[in-house]
Image (cartoon, rainbow, N blue to C red; front, side, top):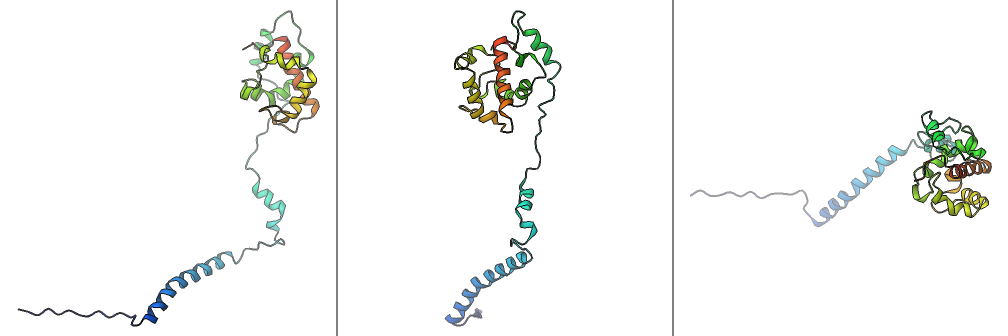
Length: 189
């Protein structure tokens, strides 16, 4: 029969010292390469206070929202809604001045800010012209209504969330909503 010839394999690592050197280099070389790469990438970046791109104005410009929503409080109500509201008013009751004038400041503030919650009763807000919901609030008096609308109450934020409104604008909106309740311009729900 024929003889089988087995070749011995030779390795470049011949001693334990060479093994230790290879293992250490296997860890150190990648780390050094990563550090050198990060230095290369960040070497041109000046993050000091003298850099104009790092000024607070430049940072604020980069962080500002992409767009904004602008609501014009002076925009008139849709033409289709106005006749329906006037037709629903009882003939015997006269509306207070804040509720009677369609172009009044109270109506425009209500349409721009308050209607979001008070038209649908969001988060427990009393619906506009809902006499049952407004009755306990009206018993507490107008100064209490003004105070809660200025400072906020329960889920309602101060000034209905529009802190740019003046106190007079908020009072006009409260007067408008109270006028809606007293004259019954909108239907009770």
